[in-house]
Length: 458
Ligand code: ARG
Image (cartoon, rainbow, N blue to C red; front, side, top):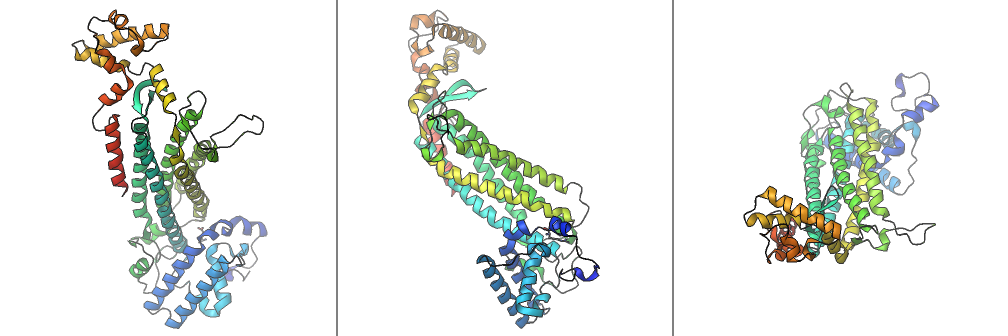
């Protein structure tokens, strides 16, 4: 059909199902802003090098602005038979300004156009995500500072290990998110390169100025190779890989929040506004936000695999396969933004139940290592000290009492080396205080580490 911009060589209309099957306009509409921005830069450059007249350029730019306004008013007549956002906008431009609209596509192809649009889109989304990530990290650092000396059990194997401060635990999450923020900025460098000018695959016969277009669009530079330009989606994979790792971190974080709000741990409270109830059990207050974030990690991880698999067998250069890059990428962006927003709002509102945390640390023999270290400092070999303390713990388990609750006489039956000063190291405060070095859990170290992290946040 001659309605299609490419209809010239065809002798029958596209099969009605195939038309819908091959169209992307339902989901690539969201690129309209970046598509128009790219077209304006392209037309500006074409006029600069003499391929378009200044009048033609102005007509095109005015027309594109009008199309943008029409889209934003919700009045744009999106057409599936025009396949994608690019051909919809171009056809509408021609409806509005006539024959000059048909000159816009000179020296470019949808192949370099779509690659440019996605990069512009992703660059904006990366900047928005970076902001939300900063907001979440700032909230975590505030909370860590407030909780710098709140004592809780630290775990390995989810069994009580040694006392730590809640602030120290929060800073572990902040470290993960700081690495994610670095990865995102590193990814942005490779997103911010301009493929426009590659045309379909080989470049174009017009005297284009790619450096100029790149500059107009805020790209760091044009890409080097036209074949790679239209087929490369590494930047999208890198972004999804950043996202998968970020979500993996948020998911681990979520898992702990879910555990800690349970009656069995009862370490923290989440405000009601971040929780929901049960339609049958009147007592329930469920930590839906962390659960949902943990669950959404699955789809983001899936999108990464989708894109890797999408690319793995594609010959150079552009293939229609690439149209399948958009939905996983868009959903990754939407999911990550939603999760970050919910977490950045929720984290500052987490409250600790310090008494419960402390009691849990006390119950789990968390200062056993401190007792062993105490014996070592008095000359006992570490392996012997380990054995001595193990026996003391066995008594504690049998009699349901913590090491700090035993009398000196009780402790001395395991080793004559133990003196009255032992009770200093058996306290939870003494234990965390003693780990007073860079990276340790002593409250002063936690405050200092939070301060450094805040300085890095900028
Ligand atoms: N809708 C297409 C995509 O998303 C645009 C590029 C189409 N190019 C082509 N030669 N069919 O990838």
